[in-house]
Figure 1: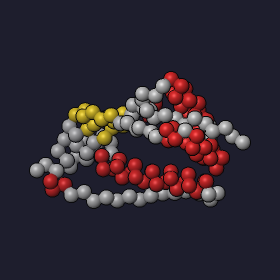
Figure 2 (figure 1 turned 30 degrees about the horizontal axis):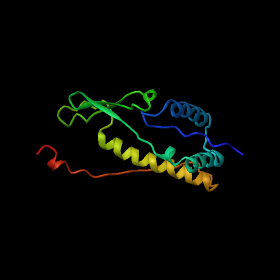
Figure 3 (figure 1 turned 135 degrees about the vertical axis):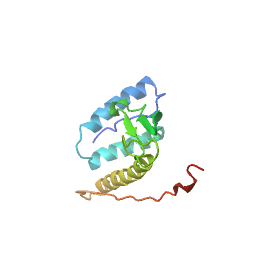
Length: 146
């Protein structure tokens, strides 16, 4: 029997005990290359024992750099570094320094689905060799600049 790990708190205002628990959980989870049914059950048990642990606040910080280029950072996970976001050169001021905001939005939806499928399949005992998503979104820019 596994004792439930404390799940990482993504809240910046977390207490020192929550931050320490978060470090232990991050180490525990990082050690696994593949999620296991047991590890997911441990997280489920931790959430059942302490429902507040399932509530997370994700944060991102964005700052305009130049032209239409921005830099994203993630206050809760600074180890992930910064991400450049920009528009393509066909947009006045765009320098194509990184994906545009719509690319990131669509990518986030796809990765969320892939991760969810893998986690649910693992709990159900279904082996998943790969999951891929192709996300497409239409955007009408006629009203963008008035």
